[in-house]
Structures are given as structure tokens and as C-alpha cells.
Image (tube, rainbow, N blue to C red; front, side):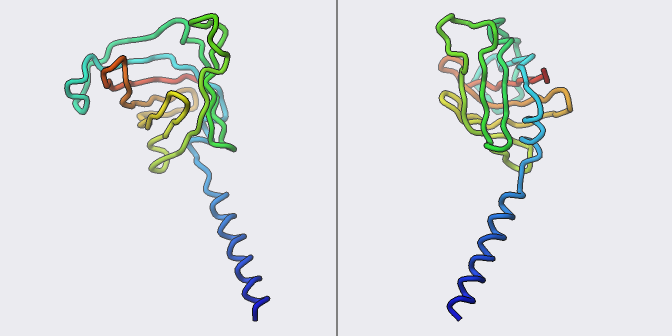
Length: 152
């Protein structure tokens, strides 16, 4: 009886682990198929009422325009590569790395790294681009950002 219980428990654990393994994120799988660049960065003009529809202003630094985002679906991680043009010559080639997590069946992506802790709302997604919005700090002010990524 004891052996039967151990065998049954082993089978249950095996199937439970298999089920968890099969539950891959479609969003992360799709993002991991390509490398991405931010091609548009917009942010709200003020933080007085960040929950209202913000007024957006463009904000793109040329040294950040060639940064490359890599997403890994196997490890649920990201790497932000500095790209060929550095804002500061002493900047490391890997600007940031961390974890990603699909939330709400692909409608949100949690991005957590050294200086990043954001929940991206997926506004649109196609084979060649995707657009997200999130709240973040610009200086000491909380702003709403809207970022478009384009496939490289």
C-alpha cells in the first residue's frame, strides 16, 4: 500500500509539473521571436491627474534610438542592449536585464530589472510592432508613457 501511494504521488507530481510547463505565454513567445527597438516614446505633459487622458509630447534621445530589446521566452527574461551609439562612453553594453511576466492573458507584461519595475499595458500588437503604455517616473514626476517598439 505504501509503494502504491508513492507511485501515485509521483505520477501526480509529474503531471502537475508538465501542466505548468505547457502553460507558455503567447505574448512572450511572440516577442522572443525578434529583436525590438523603441521607435516612439511619448509621455504625458504633467502628473496632476495621471489617470486622465494625458497630453503626449515626443521624447526620443538619439543615443537611445538604437538600443535593442531582447526577450527570452525560455527563461522569461529580457536584456536591453545599449546598441552601437552610447549616451555615455562609459555606459556598459548591457544597460539592463531582468524578468518578464505575462499578466492577464497577454494584455499586460510585467518588466522588472535593475532600475525598471513596470507593468506595460499592451495597447496593440502586430508581427512588426507593438505599443505599450505604463506609468513611470520622469525626474520626480509620475508620467504616463506610451512607447512603440518596432521589429528590427
